[in-house]
Amino acid sequence: MKRSISMVLVLALIIGIFAYVGNHMAEKYNQVSLNVTILVSSEFGDKALNDSAHDGGEMLKEDGMNVKYIECRNTDYKKNMMDAAASSDVVVAVGWEFWEIADVSVEYPNVKFIWADNAVDEPDEYPNLLSVMYAQNEGAYLAGYIAAATSVSGAVGIIGGSEDLATNDFIVGFKQGVRDCNSGIDVLVSYADGVYDDPALGEQLANDLYDQGVDIIFQVAGNTGTGVYKAALERGLFAIGVDKDHKIEFPQYDSCILCSVKKDVGRSIRKLVFQYANENTFQGGSVLMGNMAKGYIDVAYGDKTSVQLVDSNLKNEIIGIKEDIIDGNLKVDSAFNQ
Image (tube, rainbow, N blue to C red; front, side, top):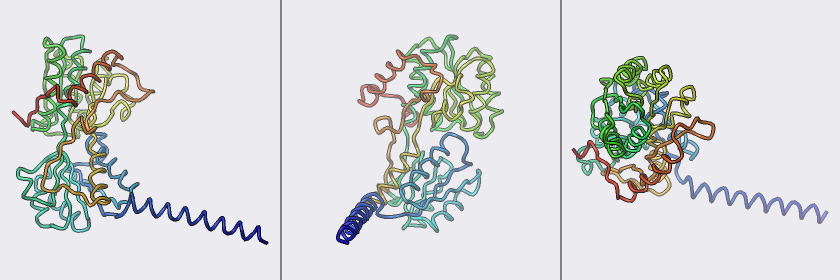
């Protein structure tokens, strides 16, 4: 009988310890469960910027947040933001198309807004709006360096979705990386004229560049850019991905993708919302920069199952270049400063 009582007491003690630890962990890591809505201008499934944001939302769900998603499908940006704000603690808009976010933030002063991948002109006038920019030029520099070091034909290319500052920021960094590696390499540029969801157009633009002697193309054109991979594979040439690790995202094109420039939008979204929920920290009225030093920009070569097209010596050289960028010893040009 005494032994049974002892066992009951031990079990009660164990349960009490687990309850205390669980409550303590919840208090420490999930003090508040926020209602968060993430909006993208087009649709998810691009395996680039939008899907990176979706990854951030899924991480927030694991943190205990209530997360909803809205695909604007290239229309009604302001209305969708207002609908989101009416039922959310935090609204995250991803992409330059949400330029009306400043006006919406004024109409909903009790809601926190995050504009990922763009910024308002006078951020201090919008205390509940945080803009987040990314140093894509730094990652593009590495892509340009790798392209120049790998090219056999002496010409490389880049296809942008549209001729805007964000896209041109990639192009400026890419050109500098090419030039610093080998000033004798030509860089040809083409644009998809604002079309981000037409792989057939991307394939056509890629073939046009390949016909001009290019043997490597860096694509920064969303889903349109996936057509570049098809053209590269069919012609036995090469491409470079963007936003996510496309050697993993597109295994069918692994053998023609050299590497990808990663812009970790999702992890930055998760961190900012998590900090607001658990530390009551929100840097509204400001513009944050997600750069290489903060770990949001990098170059990726797939995983251990991927075909490695960039040799180890060049990878090691890239590591040294990354350190120079992070330390400030190497300044990468930006379209936003020109």
